[in-house]
Image 1: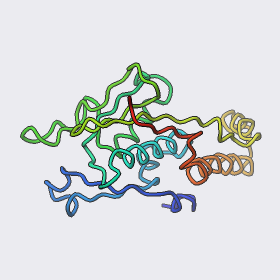
Image 2: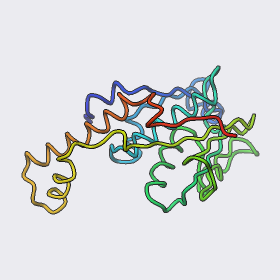
Image 3: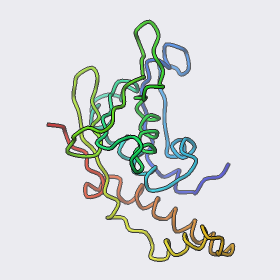
Image 4: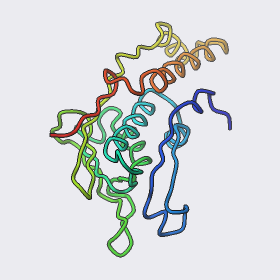
Length: 203
């Protein structure tokens, strides 16, 4: 398995998962996630997967400024409906990082460690997603604006040719390279760019 080299340059996220500790899946429940984990979950690397990964990492870091984030310790509310746009993809990546799941998630053990029902959709929110700690109630609102990271002008032309089966091998490779170049710019050049990623304390 070989990923683009820039994957290794993307910041990782370390969390503590009480369920992983309880079941002996990881020493002290310590887990570390990288961008490649989000790609393996989604099955592809795109600006949506990249932006969801950044938002998840930045939201958890903001909510747990003095300690490791507690995976399974937050609730997610989305402004969009689950079936709308790329909400489902974003929700899946955020589940990976936060542990917060939809109705099919883990139901818990003896009233503890439940992950089910920690995602809700179709809320009135100032931004795209609200992430709330279940222990303290502290919350942040987050959103991304990828218009500040435009694709190369040739990308959509090449995408059309690839989809229609008109592209030759060189064009297919160039399309893939341009596609991942934008993903790399999102992750490496704009991680802390507040014009691209809004992360602010909820009112």
